[in-house]
Length: 455
Image 1 (spheres, rainbow, N blue to C red):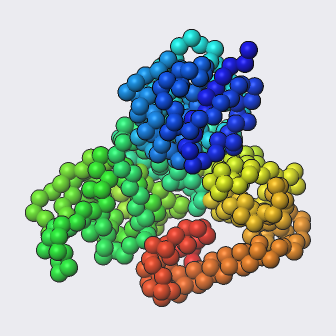
Image 2 (image 1 turned 90 degrees about the vertical axis):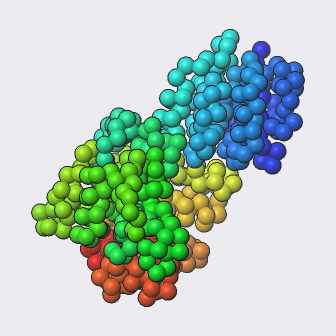
Image 3 (image 1 turned 180 degrees about the vertical axis):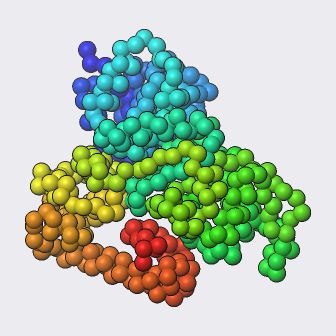
């Protein structure tokens, strides 16, 4: 006799995309609003699977009711990779196990079979495993050196020491920082990312430390700085290498004292934050060339992680491409697409100067512009001509939409590079010249992996 699974889903979404995960079970579907505890017991289900992928709001309410009124039927939620902290807490309290979408059918079947084979729900170390899997969910790969790096993250997360994350543009330094935060004791507090290259030097102190009312002409009220916003949590200093000597001295003082004084205030404020920093430059070389203070470097360089460039773990390219493909199709409500063998070979030949971020962008374009159920080589043609040359292939004619999208990207990148060159890498002045919001211009710089220091 087949075991019965009850799928609880949001009434405004369809669970059909997930039913194949439970092939071999007898399935019944019910929207969460009409479940009723009596209906649950009358269903004689062996397992309840709440779908919290497309819309978690209703499932949060559902799991709250399960926490208040426990039931004997084991619960096995299907979560999205960006599930909220409240949902994660509820899952750890009431669930027997969980899975993160997108996932493999074999893994889900194995877990579901194991749960329904037991007479009672187990409540072992699911909170720890949930936290670890969700924290590392977006760091995908199977390369041994990469896995060795990932294995260090939970260990580093136990410490309150500063962490320096190095690596080329697009290798996933911020994802790594967020994983450390999520796995740490500070995960229930804010994660504040600071783009050190995005605000002018004279605003550094105000942005970081805040100000008191009357500190300057337009200071009509107290304003918290970024450190105060991160209180209890994690402060992530991205592009820390871009700080001026003056800003470096102010940051160093904060790191030494773990206290700061808002502009115009008459008292120091102690801060309870963990500091993570990231850079794509050689900081040792910058110290030797007196561009970076050695004492600041040693303050930041307590624990260190180096994110590998994609070219050094080429075996992960197909794994990442499939992961992004599944994730993007799910996000956009598209049927799952597949890749041909020629497409995979095309991806493997590319040089990927923008690393994982560039691969994600390529797969994003492929999902948007591909006209069939398969991603073909023309959908993932690398943007760099050098990749085509090294692969021994001539560029091929593209469809109109692909060609237009690539032309727009080429224009944007060229314009940003030339504007930055005109203003010697200064984002604020470049954005003002381009009549763009400074943060939007900074996002373009990041999107195209432009190193302002090499221009």
